[in-house]
Amino acid sequence: MLCANDCAAILLFDPINIRYATDTSNMQVWTLHNPERYALVFANGPVILWEFQNCKHLHDDQVLIDEVRSAVSWSYFSAGDRSSELIKTWAEELINTLKDYGENNLNLAIDHVDFLGVKLLQESGINIVEGHSLMENARKIKSVDELELMRWSIEVCQKGIQRMYDETRPGITENELWAWLHFENIAHGGEWIETRLLSSGQRTNPWMQESSNKILKSGEMVCFDTDLIGPYGYCADISRTWTVDHEMPTMRQRKLYNLAYDQIHTNMELLKPGLSYKEFSDQAWHIPQEYYENRYCCMAHGVGMADEYPSISHSGEDFNRSGYDGTFQENMVMCIESYIGEKGGSEGVKLEQQVLITTNGYEVLSTYPWEETWLL
Image 1 (cartoon, one colour):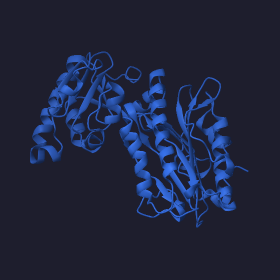
Image 2 (cartoon, rainbow, N blue to C red; image 1 turned 30 degrees about the vertical axis):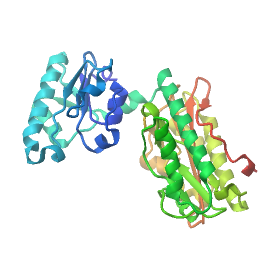
Image 3 (cartoon, rainbow, N blue to C red; image 1 turned 90 degrees about the vertical axis):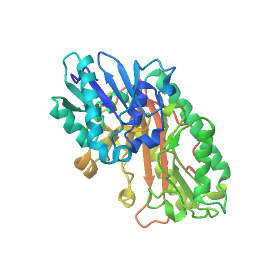
Image 4 (cartoon, one colour; image 1 turned 180 degrees about the horizontal axis):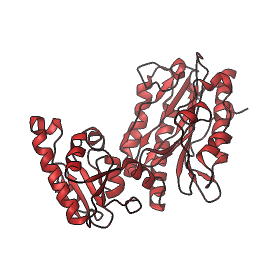
């Protein structure tokens, strides 16, 4: 990707991108909002990691990095009113390193950095290339090794889902139920969960309400979306819905579930290499009018070390407003989404399936069972 975009190197601050490029991890969530470690990956040269203070030893056995240096911390948190001084030190070292290894190419891709850092680099003659899209496109095709790690994350996630299923009973809170997913993830070497999307009863409609101290009541719906970052940093993004105490659903609950199930499976059957995102959107399951307003924010999205490019918009107004085209390729991993709940309705159903695009179609990666007895 660097060569294709005529970039000497890419500067990475996003800890997910750093991990993808270097297989290093350190305080991942904290460094999402504190730019205290960064990496420079050359197209034809070394991989250099600037690590947080006194953390070089974390990577003594790392073979993918040529050099580990101490990061220059110039965020206001770290530097206070010395930020303007330290950012110059940061920029000078970076510029000198780029000139040392960049083969006279001053095109530098960056995934994201503070605007003051960009300004200093540009004033020194560095041409900044938008690097976030470059990384998204580099990450969208999964290697054999990545898929093996993702399958392990999904297995861990499904242990957590089963634990939640077993613990779903009246009298506990949504937060208590959600905590079991965290427990199983951490216990099996996972890392973090990006959201807290679990709700029950009337809180399932509209979607996107995070877990709370609401107490579960017998017979009401429980819906969740895992957004789980498991072992080795790979994501398992799975949604399921069932009832508290696993009571048989009402006819209304059953109808909502069947519609969501149909949407997931109809749209999965479309997947194949060479299909465009626009074709997928146009050919997808038609959402009945009474559920359209509360539709999920996208029909499908990529997934790897987190939710990734692409995000596929619904046809019509959504695609016209913000949709974009592209082509599905073999070894992309996609999450197929559904939310069914009418505006003002008492409950809704959230389902999601994680799948691998193969030579001839797709392979289901998330194998946690559906509520088979609910299907009409």
